[in-house]
Amino acid sequence: MWAGQLAQAAAFLRERDDFLIVSHVQPDGDAISSTVAVAWMLDKLGKTYAMMNEGPIPSRLLFLRKSGDISGCGEQAPARKFKNVVAVDCADFARIGPARQWFEDEYELLNVDHHPTNDAFGKVNLLRFDAAATAEILFELAGTLGLQPDAEAATAFYTGILTDTGGFRYANTSPFVMQTASRLLEAGAPGPDLAERLLERMSVGQMLMLQRGLSRLAFSEDRRIAWVWVTTEDLAETGASNEDLEGLVNYPRNIEGVDVGILFKENGTKSVKVSLRSSGLVDVAAVAQHFGGGGHVRAAGCRLTIPLNEAIEQIVGYVRNELGSA
Image (cartoon, rainbow, N blue to C red):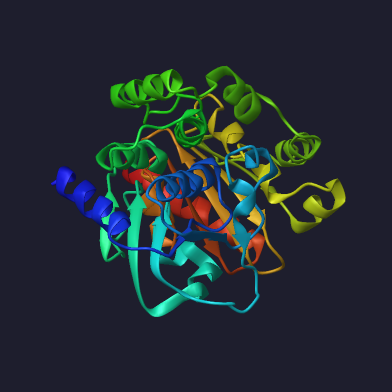
């Protein structure tokens, strides 16, 4: 079954040309590293392609090979459209965002992902839900294509795995993940340097948003749910960006006795992005899916078009009920 999926995905890349590579809105380390990993494979196959995302690439990821070539589509009208599309790390089709405007009406899509909530929206689907990261799946695909990563490609694959496992600390860190990481280190990925750059170093914006978020730390009555929230004004006043919120949700989750940690990020007066982290007792992917989002059992997210106070009330109330059932 898995070998068949790999073969179909390899054929999709081998037998076509002129690709558009997209990942999810507000891309993270796995999304960007997977985008450039596909670009590396297409380069090796002698194919042409373009890379696109809905907004700017996080500055901390601009060291990755060709990451600066990823176009931000924003609200501009498509200059041209693509028939052959590769979507990476998108839990569902909606997560592609505005980049879908660049698809031809009769587009054909290769969907590569590891989120259990993915509904196989591609013509060809390469889905492995026990994979720690989409980059892990793409490393297997490279092997199926007979491609041996050089140091730059190994760095991209390793970055996706490193960030989606929280530095090999999360429950998705399997023996296979460690074997893959070992092979990538052998291929030239600078493991310690990447850990310092992506996990240890904090921008001033991150520190200021951490300060504001933790000042609002709140708990449920039994202290099994903890959450923080930030506003559009916080970002404006501190000069921080969305990427400076990376990892903030882990702080409430890491408190002893807390089963679910939540970050609420206000976008305007009636839009809230919600990030959820779980100890595993509550399936936060199911929680997010209830509100139109998705993700993993221990890490998920969604977006609500209601005021911040209502979003907090609805999400915390739903999680409280889920904890009661558990």
